[in-house]
Length: 145
Ligand SMILES: [Zn+2]
Image 1 (cartoon, protein in one colour):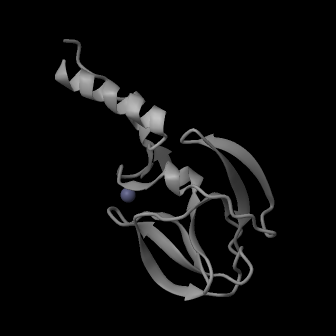
Image 2 (tube, protein in one colour):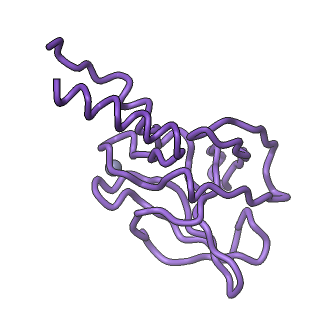
């Protein structure tokens, strides 16, 4: 009963304040939250579309890298990730910003890229690699009391 109450109060707080997390699809590590979502337009996107993510209208941009891989990417102000490798200026999707590959700080799965220059920085997260904590909670079953 207590567990159920906690579960529903967590959900209502989550929905009311929009502070749900995006978590790593592989391991469940909390990567970022709705307050960090930010739209950063790129002239190099193949196309973009809007999607409601954590109750926020968010721009998703579709990019193709030189290895011919396609990614659906959202931008966030901050994320709990680790850098993997060095920074590069070449083949950037955001003119003037260098990029560094980012991986989940818990399981090491590729999550996206950190883009930065002297004036700005943000993380481009691959949409397919995260899932909302709200969704994850919705598939958990609470035992009947
Ligand atoms: Zn992970």
